[in-house]
Amino acid sequence: MRPNKCSSCHEDSPSPSGLQKISAHGKDWQPHTCNQCEKTFPSQSQLSKHQRSHSALRPFQCPQCHKAYKTPTELRNHTRSHTGEKPFVCSECGKAFMQAICLRIHMTQHSGERPHSCPHCSKSYPTLSKLKVHQRSHTGEKPYFCVECGKRFADPSVYRKHRRNHQGHRPYSCGLCGKTYTELKDLKNHERSHTGEKPYLCSDCGKAFSRSSSLACHLRIHSQSKPYQCDQCGKGFTQLSSYQSHLRTHSGEKPFLCPQCGKMFSDPSSFRRHQRAHSGFKPYPCDKCAKRFRQPADLAVHLRVHSGQRPYKCQSCDKAFVASWDLRRHMLVHTGLRPFSCSECGKSFAERSSLNKHCRTLPATVYIDKAEGL
Image 1 (cartoon, rainbow, N blue to C red):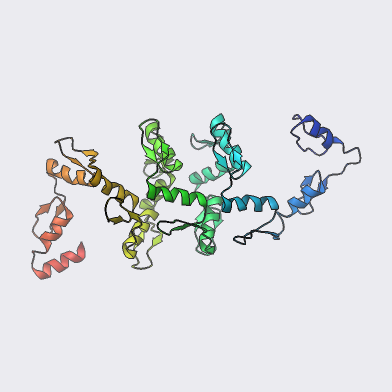
Image 2: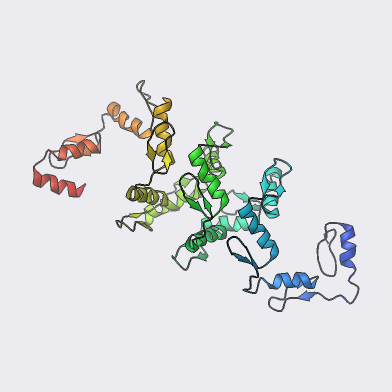
């Protein structure tokens, strides 16, 4: 028997004095039993609290967004998402949290305790619930189904966030570009794309990141850990999203459909990039000139024009470039490769744009046929 555990009701107590109070049940003590699931509780109040989990009744409503909850504790936790209050502070690093459970999970990062290990790979987790979500990345199971759009999810928290998108509940708005979010932490992450703040630093190479999840993925490059392995071709991936996109190259699945032109995409990032081309939306402004960009990566490349930074250096000559694709195009000069060939005359080119320019010099009928095939 564990210390400070009552032999009558099996309730844990944090101290021996608390145990004395719990144990004063006497011989006639009877547990309070739920008539729906037969779970027992040491007091009527705890039973009443539990019975709300079976009921659809949600009597505690948020005055700001009108979301309703079954218990006052759940409402208090939710209210902090509006106020930003984080009363639970880590004594080791000072990081603060809205809920006690989040602090307890965070503390395992300092203790290193990760008792729940995946039988399929080397990963381990501080809680059983996180392990169960991870295991679905191996099995492909997605038990959470959205009735409005048919999308399925492996992680209940991601599913709940997705549901808010349908409900239109996006209370957190960016003051710079107007983009809205369902959660405060997502807004904070987004705001760093405007400020350029990158607080998460890699201790191995010094590279900085705006998100902790991006740093975690980057660290796998140093450790050469690729926990997501394709069963069909053996290719390994550091990120689950990259692995899932790769699987679609085998299946041919393209679930992301553009409603404006009907074009389909296998990964969400390509789909979002394509949609911005239709809307002309360029939320990322350069603070040095009037230019704006559709993606933070494009802005980062452009800023090197102002700073003079050219990190992509040719190994064959002294030339350096601001973008990786400029270096790849330059390397064709050294290799002599001309991968774009005209099927009409056989002439080859280093760049597709040069081939297209050549095609325009062909007779009109030939050019039209070739243009349709490109």
